[in-house]
Length: 193
Image (cartoon, rainbow, N blue to C red; front, top):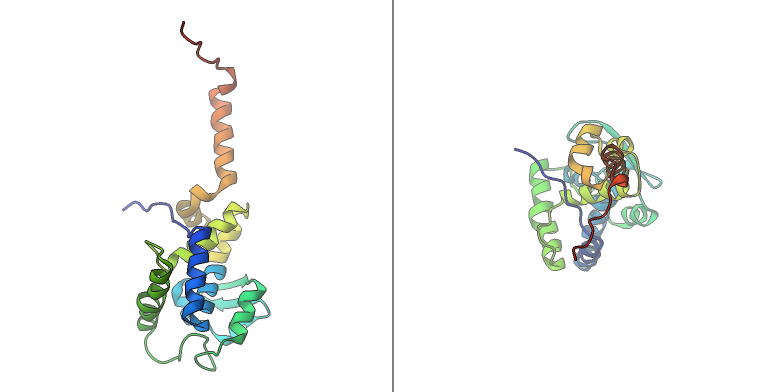
């Protein structure tokens, strides 16, 4: 099955999501901030350890691959994590009891669903926060390799899922096509009389 380009949240959608999350609770708002500004998968956000916050950086090993990731958070997000009441002494959003699949399903199908419904954002799902994180970086000209490092993915995967958002790549392709096809030598069609 061919995968399509990944769709980030628009700025307008993010504003509505953040407003809705803030109305629900500080914990939900902070969780949404972490998802949007870290690029973490929902399983990593759910199991985020208190010890993972080092200054304004999140430093952790991902659940899916066990790979180490270090990402700088905006100060507002780091401060939100520091000021919420962690669910346990070890984790921000998890008691440490129960199965990870149950925890991620709770956040996905109840808490975040409630946010998306209140925000009236269609086709919303938690992984779109990761897509938003990646596409914003690529749109700012951050090299694919650096984005891949932050997402703990390969460059090939990042290019496959986000190529439409890599402006420098498209500009280079456009210039190559124009040069190869000699667009500059074409003359405009004469108007008929």
